[in-house]
Length: 208
Image (cartoon, rainbow, N blue to C red; front, side, top):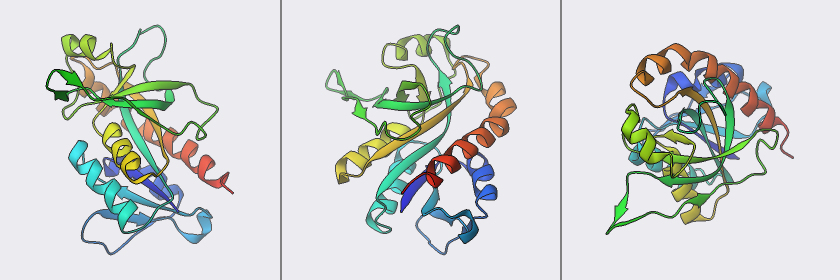
């Protein structure tokens, strides 16, 4: 069984609808299970935003539900060259790192992600921070670490690494991580979530 972590219900909604998912009785994390007609073996956690929430959801999927793999899905901001990618593009992640973690002057090491998932997509580096990146100066600083920014991915990757579970990530660019980011996220979230759902559904159905 694959454990899927979304930060928010709005990001997950198209996938939950397409898979005819129903909510499970679990007090620790908000969980959904796709309907039998979807023909996929997965469980979905709506973690809430931020690294701590994402890590707790991922641990719950690994320790209680014993998932064989973790997949983190959601929106991200673009940190790279605006001419290279833009809003609406979908990428897979090959490495994720915490961008706001300082260990006595040294940052955390980047964590590798499973590249067997979503092979048709271009791969990028993900930088995870506890608060959204909607600031041009901070955006420029984080761009040295990766091309994409989110609030959950590296935390899910850290849990997966700790417990020896494969971890894949699929991210849709909703904004360019600048002062207009909040407006852009609100404008594009539903369209991007719909595209993410279609790609995820196709990948899950292709599993042996």
